[in-house]
Length: 257
Ligand code: NAD
Image (tube, rainbow, N blue to C red; front, side):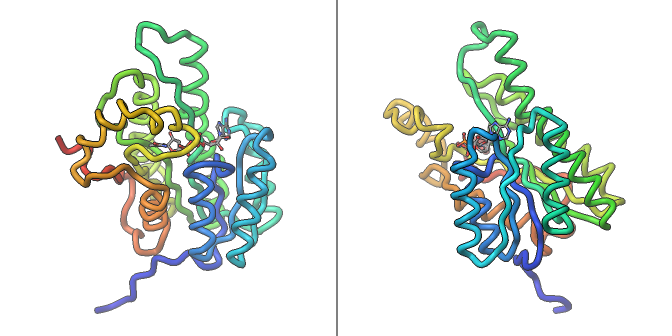
């Protein structure tokens, strides 16, 4: 035995995009519970929900800041990172959680729907990572975790563009890890199975969806935000110091057969 393994994030400052609702909110709260000060980056329309997330983080005794951010707009990402650094002096980690879906058959998608999905799920992840990593590199290091999906590795009807963007997010972890590793910035991705959130309400209220998909999960249940938090917190922690460029699936085995 040489060193102690730590899963704590005490004294760290981290930004979570899309943290007003759903998985992102619970990540912000859970990462604050793990000791981090959190920066809640979500759309200006979500300001009230973002403030609620911030209040929940403060209840864990941590500092929290809301920065109105549209991840499709590079200028607002730059302002968000600058605001975080102005408030807290540094940025130790980023969770690229903001994401959207539009479900329909391939033959029905419009060009505008493609542009919208790619702007949030792909362009947003690229530029949030780039801008945060510039700050991290200047500080001497940092960690980034991006939210992919089990659909990064398998296909599913009516989710083609989403799945394509999530496969790209998983691959981005590799391309970023390669270039940013020497600057001590680690980049990984997490691939959850279905989790009940505002994004998936229409799925979880459909018995047909449940009957079709639950039997595909060997673990016998859908995912929770706590399952996702476990993976994200691990990847951000000192315990994962040598894990870089990976996709960690949190899917109960959905993708193994
Ligand atoms: P959600 O819709 O409940 O929450 C998404 C959040 O992102 C919202 O607060 C929204 O305001 C924010 N957001 C959307 N567009 C944004 C933009 N342009 N700029 C900033 N913020 C923006 O979704 P969720 O289910 O919590 O999903 C979170 C992430 O997890 C997404 O990347 C999603 O693809 C991924 N994911 C979800 C599931 C699931 O089953 N819920 C499964 C696998 C992966």
